Image 1 (tube, rainbow over the protein chains, first blue to last red):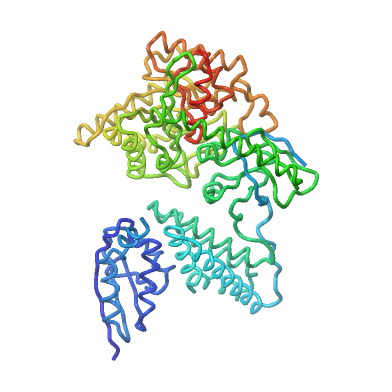
Image 2 (cartoon, rainbow over the protein chains, first blue to last red):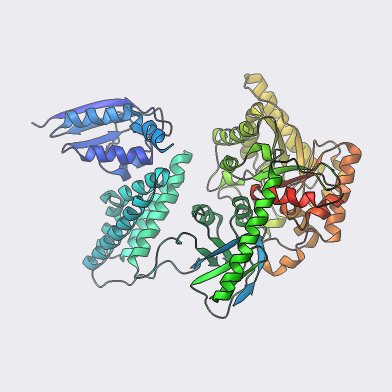
Length: 100
Length: 524
């Protein structure tokens, strides 16, 4: 039986899960072997978290409860790392400070 | 060889010509689906590696955008439908275009500005691959290029990076088109009305947008002369900059108010508020670009400009769609749009949209010194109806306890009926002369038609007489009169406007210094 994990996290970043955060989000998701999916509602539809086209299509603005689930190797770690990235506002403030 | 045209935005540019009208990549079909798929795969890889090489040279926001485009291109979910269609017998170019157009439409339909704006990224991605599919050419104009063609769309202008120079040279076009306005406010050199040359020009060209002309295949002597004129122009502009920080006044010491015209709220980012007397015209059509903005989007845009201006006035014009400014889902198709349902006529016909803008304006008014004006007013009844709508929305806000303020309400003077008989409008808070439209209506010469451009002169005695008469009426009744057309920033027209009695001009930000310098030369 393969591992599975699921979590919910609030998007607090100003414009939501937009272009640059989506790049980071999908890159991180791709670093795990597990199958990872996201949804903006508990009952789906679920999108492939490794596809930026699908993640952008979710059009999740600030204030969205993002549902993340994973199945397979490292499912727990994948969900944990992605939740953490969303909580850190995708490290966008840090990037901003650097480019300012 | 020099071709003469009409200067639309002063300046000089030297660079390679980029053909705006060349057809988007002629793709040569392959004989099997497998070959079509291979061609598409190769084109996607080519486009992605081109973007990757650009990322290395980019920084900050530009790099972020490119990385996003690369991630999209490399995602099989984007190309999947296209490969699917190829399998069903479609050629690679059509399959890719169709697949991307579906994605683009999805973004355009979003109710959030941010996601809607990504449609431009997707179009970019689409075109980069279409170009890579064909044998020749680059997708985008190289930096510093002179964009050459029949005409240019505002979106094309906005999508172009002007930071490393370049210019616009149009065979047709008009000095009063929206791109011309944008070019003037951003300081991008532009010439229109060049006509169609016998031979298709290519290579490096010299664009003289001060006098209006372009030199094709220049000789070394021509290049040298061009560079001299270009640096002399830069020096004059530099000298004009010394006027920028001063309040404008004529040689005789008569004070003249000089405000700025803006379109996008971000236009104010590059302007020092200390150098102008406020915003004489904030256009709101650009907010209405591809779809209709909601109240919140409008409120935020207006508020940004009001807060930037502090206690200086910001005159916002209610949406002036129609004419040469169509808005999908709002304006109507007409055979003669300049004389049709545009400006206030359209707003009064689409009350849902107008009321939303009114609510956004009432709420924004508490954040600064707002004035609101209506475009294309022809009769006093139109003004009364529009003012009544403001009163109604204000009453509703007061009842609900929403923070708001009723701004002074004025009108654009651009329909000749108002300029000829201004006494019907003695109750308006202010007049703002829209010289572009006033001139085209008085002279019966469409402002977007290069073949009648010679008739479109604000300095024609008939136009000047009307301007003088409105200025005199304003003085008599104590109604402020300003002018916000392009003539206000034209050094050649400024003396005549001041002589006609105007003391308040609103100009493109890039013309602020030159306008103040020109005012200082007038002796009224």
